[in-house]
Amino acid sequence: MVSVYPATTHTFILREVNELRAQGFEIDVIAIQKPDRPIGEMTETDRLESGRTFAVLPFGTHFIRPHLATLLARPGKYLAGLLLALRMGNRNLRTALSHGFYFLEAVVVGHEAKRRGHTHLHSHFSSTVALLAAKIFGLDLSLSLHGPDEFRDTAAFRMREKVAGSVFVRAISHYASSQIMQSSDRRDWPKIKVCRMGVDAAVFRPYRTQRDEGPPRVLFVGRLAPVKGIRVLISACAKVVARGCRLRLHLAGGGEERADLEKYVFTLGMERHVVFEGVRNQDELIALYGLGDVFAMASFAEGVPVVLMEAMAMGLPCAATWVNGIPELIENEKDGLLTAPADEAGLADAIGRLIEDAGLRRRLGLAGRQKAIRDYDLATNTARLGSLFREHLGFRIAAPEAKPPEANPPEANPPEPPQAAERLSTRTPTVASISAGKPR
Image (cartoon, rainbow, N blue to C red; front, side, top):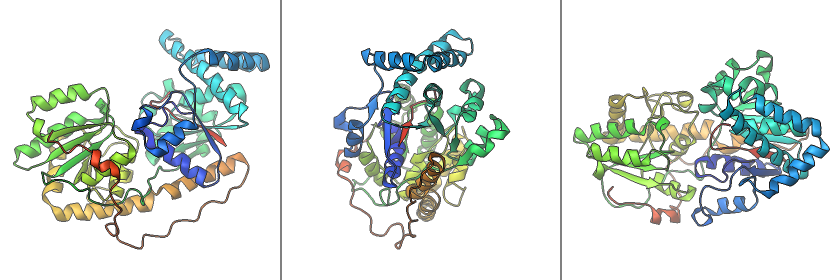
């Protein structure tokens, strides 16, 4: 079950699901909402996954049968689930109403999971719906928790109750593990397992997309949302330009802040130096990475951003803020540059250094790719997740053999750029799996 799936901002979930399938697991995905873009804008992989995914919303007559069947077959569990949802509303009318909708969704999810013969439910981000479904239908529950949103108000999030109700909780970083531990019963700490996300280094591999001559390109990929600190990034780039350094900032992604950011760019007189690329599918993003010289991120809060892993695997030198789980991915001056959050001058210095120093770009790009290969390989880390499922599902599937180290250095044998490169802007400015756009 996935809130929005396939989704441009959560391609890492689809990659992980497909990797688990390659390991021998049969996985059904139930989505709360349909994909976030038309079929014609999807990659072939996304289109295939969309066709095999069951979508819960929009609300309609298809809700009637699961609710009637559940009420008749397990009336006590049905009413207990409804009461639990209302209790989780914390005596707040608005919150109770939203949890009432989660209950409606949870019954459909649990009914569909049972209809397909599943006994285990795994959740990315949509843990409230998952907890309700598990309680009503007697499903085993496991969670993947990323942060930072889940950790802002762990009492309202019901962290303690969700950890207690799970057979295991997968934290994607040690930072995430620490936040889960401090908000849960210490008797449940053994359930918390650190299991990182990953990228396929054979897909995200250094190459240069054919491009026209122009200024060095600074790339950002992600939601255009306040938490990403994009105003700080734009201001930092403006400082670099003011020093006489040429650059062009490419912002790839969509979000609620785009209109305000466009106005801000105009206010700073940066129209010639900033390009809003819009939402890009995975093939287009790989080509966009190939256009870049530097990857920059000014986030105020993060889990461990998969886009940083992707950029590092592509050999792009990265500058980012030292918030939350990012220092687990980037060690300052070793495999990237880290700056304080909201420090425009510090970020400007980092970006300026990377633009002006080709040797530094090369050293950090090489080191970043090796870090991604060593610690954030998709197959290796998903095998770790698979071992957790095998342990708790009570059956054995042989884990895949570990990949041997690369025989060639990172730049050797680069792949051909994807066809999507031609469409990029070069203008001057058995497990049912659950995930969601925002923690619920």
